[in-house]
Image (cartoon, rainbow, N blue to C red; front, top):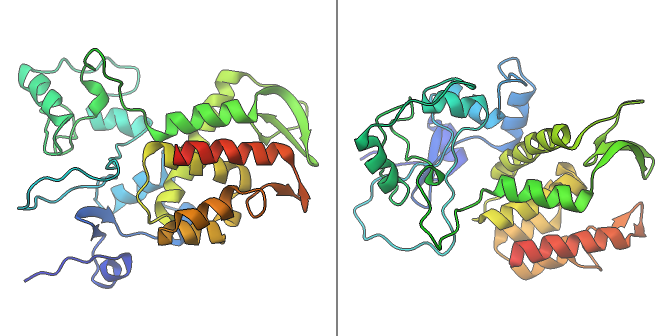
Length: 290
């Protein structure tokens, strides 16, 4: 009987590009390996998400797949996470190029698209993603219901609001920045639309990185809150923090204290308490635990 690997280490030892975590099929790559891949010759900076590119090389789709299990369906305690390609990869996934009109779906495609938004086994006839459940947002939302929002859109809106927009360079604790907080070039100006596009790419990069270091299950708001936190404090600081250790251990009280509290959270700059950082942590805490 073939034993399925349940950890990244087991999968890599067996030469398998994926493993199973709580019944979900996931790619067997660590955050360090993903970082090494981004520094290698196979990574194309203009080719979309690093995780998508790595998955394509391994001939595995960049998403969590649920194997068919002969057990009664149970409602999850937290929302299940399902990822689909982004950017140009999404258009290719749907079977047409950016700028082209999408193909007219068949009647069966419409029926399966509706069912696929509810059940994980949905299929579509059109496009190259025939073995992928269609995106839930592709079916009409019934009156009185709210369409689900991805973590990236929540994070984009929150970070843009909390950071504020500047069309010209400004000083940020000795560093010249512009837009929503990126480093500025000498004499440059920018626009809100341009910077929101840059910010969305940054949000997705952080989201991919979080997938490699956070083992706890997160809903969209929780992942958005962590994305905002990492955008502000940096990946290195978060990765080596007691907050991440507590989060992965399931100790939410300790995580709250280490990440957001006035006493131990990220509320200081160069050893000095900053009221603005404390306010930012309170907003991220409310989003995470709300």
